[in-house]
Picture 1 (tube, helix red, strand yellow):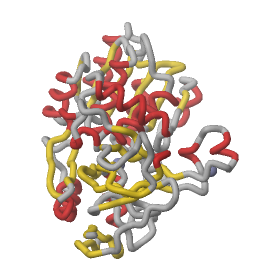
Picture 2 (cartoon, rainbow, N blue to C red):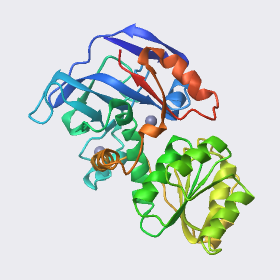
Picture 3 (cartoon, rainbow, N blue to C red):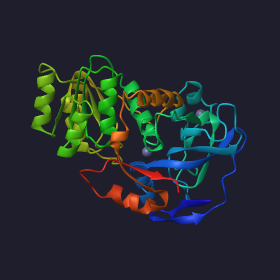
Picture 4 (cartoon, helix red, strand yellow):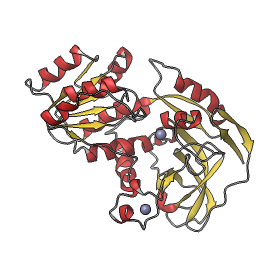
Length: 338
Ligand SMILES: [Zn+2]
Ligand SMILES: [Zn+2]
């Protein structure tokens, strides 16, 4: 098969590899759509440890073409792949925290992933994609599972005032999901006017820029109290500090972005004084896939609106350059099978 092989950081090309061999319990999948995200960019640049040479890609949709097929997962079935691997035996797996398994990994990081003609996955890690979800949209569902997992950890629900800082792909998913879970007020914060417009179109009550505007919008919508939950999706320390400021006394802070810097200046005293609960989330659980497929299938969350670009997977190098360069209009890039 052909695959985009990352030999070492910053060096990737289209190569011919042996077809992956499905083991017992695994099916062979012909990739039709695979999303690319910031994690891929960081792996490409060598900023996240990975096993080289590597086929990246962890947001995978495809069609079963062989392997250990079952009644439910037979040849021709369109599936979404859960890329989170786990041992199923350790302390964390036994507690149901499969996303934290120290013996696990992620397809496209520790083992080969989706930016290739074929990949393999266990039928424990495949989910049927219903007809109402097209492949392009389906490839973004894996991202939604991480958003859902974070809102579960953060207890986002009915009656909450939710503020989301950063209105990229994940921020716009958080806005829609909070709305779907019955949040009372949803406020988006971004310096980008176009993304603020998209947030309003997708159900935000208000979309404002950072700083004084954000503070005013949050106080106006909460009778001067502050947000119950602030979900930070930018990944910059000054914005994390702003998120701490926007949360109410006793509020919850979900630092959803990844903060690679080991050093930070933050108003740490506020953590104590405001009695803030900081709730992190990593990856997602298998059950999150079923719930997300439902939310997208019934229209509660519109992922199609977030896909702005689609190109053949053989153009992965171009797609990574697009992701690295800042853009006002670009949201999700999906790579297609060829
Ligand atoms: Zn991703
Ligand atoms: Zn485990």
